[in-house]
Structures are given as C-alpha cells and as structure tokens.
Image 1 (cartoon, rainbow, N blue to C red):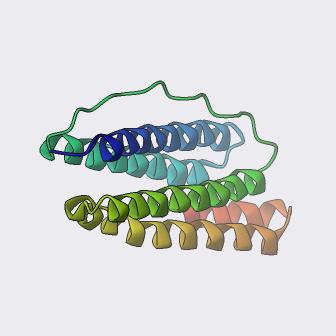
Image 2 (image 1 turned 30 degrees about the vertical axis):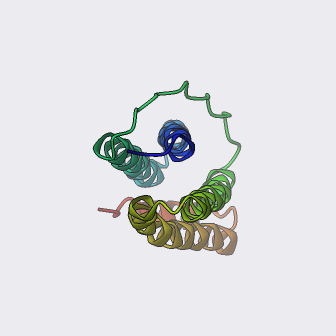
Length: 162
C-alpha cells in the first residue's frame, strides 16, 4: 500500500506527464501549421512518449495499491513565434520535469519507499536522454539560424525519428 504522500505526489506526476503530452501535441499542431512536418512528427512522437510515461506511473499506483486520481490538465500556452522558440521551450520543460522526478526520488527516499524509488530510477535515466535530445535540437537550430533552407533540412532530419 502506498503512503498518502507518495500517492498524492505520483498522481500529480501523472498529471504533469499528461500536461507534457498535451503541450507537445499543441507544438505538433504549430509545427505542422508552419509546414515543418518533420518537426511535427518528432513532437507527436514526443507527445506519445509523455503519455506513455503517465500510464507507466498510473499503472504503478494501481499495482502498488494506491488510488489513481486524475486531475484537470492545464492548457498549454500557444502559439509560438518560431521553431526555435518551440524547441527552446521543449528543453526548458524537460529540465523542469527532471527536477520533478528528482523531487519524487527525494520524497520516496525520505519515506523509505524502496519500491517507488526503484520504479523512479527508470525516469531518472529517461530524463538524461530527454534533456540531451532537446538540447541537441536547440543547438542545431541556433547553428542554422533563420536560414529557411537549413531549417527545412533540419526539419527533414527530425522527421526521421522512429
């Protein structure tokens, strides 16, 4: 049985992961609207991945004997002005999520909830990858600048994400 403090924190994280999915889906719509379909593809897959993260935590709550409480999902800020702004926000958002995961790890350690600590280790490793991927894209956008041909090439590369 999960302690109430852990259950509440995990339910909040489910909400945050669903918000992340919602945010990246809004970014997908924006990228597609400016004919950056490769970026839209990358962001759609990111949205799907965030949804999967939410379901992973939700399933854990159920299996650990907790009660899942779905909370309202905040609407993301839209629209964005540039593709660079989108991916800068992706990177900043992933940094925030990393802090949230670290806070959960800290709480689980304080509560001596070793099963939750074990489950969260996957997320700790995942966030290293998430930040690295977003940072790399931001740096590439900075390098190519506003040169439309270069942005279209980068967009094509982002569309190859599987």
